[in-house]
Image (cartoon, rainbow, N blue to C red):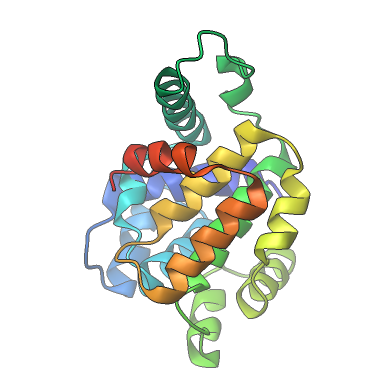
Length: 209
């Protein structure tokens, strides 16, 4: 599966049409009209249905996500009075590999599911919007039924702080009004990714919180 294409479709569709309140059918129609593929429809429907995800409208592509993460890193370094950075702008550029996009998508889905268990009816409805691609259906159903844990996400990210910041930023922007479970999820995610509190604050600001 082309996870780069799926992620960019989700972010692009969100930028074009996310509203604070959205009807599932209306969302599907709008995504379809602007060229969102089946995967984008299924994942975006999940995000909108669970949390709102209106802050994703600030993004539009994986490149935009990297740019926002780097801006947060620059602000963090400035406040730490560090004149030299250990991560260059290219470290935050769109590393458009399937693995990178897959990790970010998994984090977004996990964030959408963090406020509570997804019911079987919701899971079926979301999966149904993913079209007739058996491979895509299987992957999305798996992620819905058993979202990636923070430990699994962090293990895939490794020591890549640039990717870690993008993963956290994407997950944070999925969440709208934080509830207790979401707060715990994000705190655990930041810790697992090795992001310190000051840097997380800058990422939060970039996300508009």
